Amino acid sequence: MNKNRNIFPKLYQGPTIWLLLKVTDGCNLKCKYCYCKQKGSCKKMSFSTAKKSVDYFLNKFKNFKYFCISFSGGESLLNFDVIRKTVFYAQKKAKRTLFGGELLFQLYTNGVLLSPAINKFLFRNGFLIRISIDGPDYIHNAYRKFANGEGSYNIVMANAIALLKLYKTKNMERRITINSVFSPRLLNIQERIAHFVKCGFKSYIMAPTSSAPNTEFFFSVKDMDRFFNEYSKLIRWGIQQASMGWQKKSLRDKLYGFFPFLWKMPLGAPLKLYYPFCGAGVTSFAVLPNRNIYSCHVLAEENRGKVGNIINGIDNKMQMLYKHNDVDSRKECQKCSIRYSCGGGCLAENGEIYDNFFKPSKIWCDYIKRHSALDSKLYAKLSKKLIEIN
Ligand code: SF4
Ligand code: SF4
Image 1 (cartoon, rainbow, N blue to C red):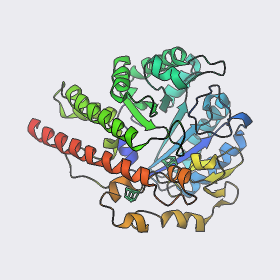
Image 2: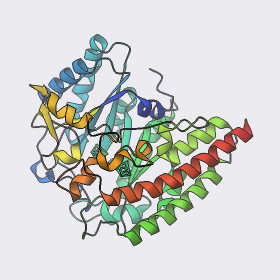
Image 3: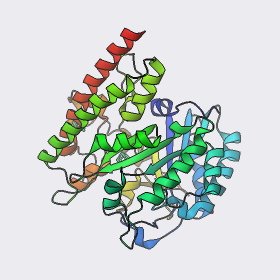
């Protein structure tokens, strides 16, 4: 495996199976906007459950090009022992099962428990890292606090930088992605990214807080307008920054960091279709400590989206239901002009608003249509620029 390359464009173009193991419900932070509803229960996944999940999924999806096992929580590192054992087990099992496919690991973490020993393990196994840092200290500490109310920024950033230094020794820094959550109260998109760039990170994902209407984290129409002003600012700034090294490769690599949607679109080529949205229930699954399989880890928080369990496998009828709810089949999406770039939206987001998580939420549709219009402009500008410089 060449661990130096930017793997994300390939992973998103797939075909890839995404297996998420929720290794614990427990967490060592008390972030106000967290979607996890069962944090208090602190249930941990046993190694036997993780092992059975690997067996089942590797056998069922052995012909896929990429097979990515993600460890998530709560805070996943609270169950590091099971992560470690599962990685060794899956590597052995994949040698006998995956025919030409590539096995990858991904860790979702808040970064508090990263240590030299854990970093070494992640580095050696080429882990993709998703670390939650919201921005500079005053942004991060607004929501990401310990139980005693103290902000976690100093610890988390120091740990993330130590991991980054290690990854840099083998040019693997693009495997570390910063996950930054923004709320209507604290947008500051461009300021966040400028901060991550200054700290040396190369890959970032911005996600809005997701919540039902009439809560602090809900985006009103006015909030959306403010968000898109910020996003336009980021586009102008991103192009200016990326233009500093006029090499096709460096331009593309830098922009993959600023605008993750480009992972799904090869630059300088015709706009490629990318859908379904995340593959929930079709190519993406989550297993919980209770051994149930869900289409999505967020829906699983409310015991929704169950598609089977690791003993009896995925229920075929359930899988068909997901397969037949793509944008070509759904009445609401069939005629939508951006259906292939939207992919049908996030089921969990729909589930916050309607009982039926296959029914697209109007809030999502408005958001993604505006996003997509700006992204297309950006894409056109970049393609033109690439033609000019080649
Ligand atoms: S924007 Fe809305 S209607 Fe259009 S494809 Fe996406 S979810 Fe469906
Ligand atoms: S449905 Fe939404 S929350 Fe669930 S996996 Fe897909 S994108 Fe993520």
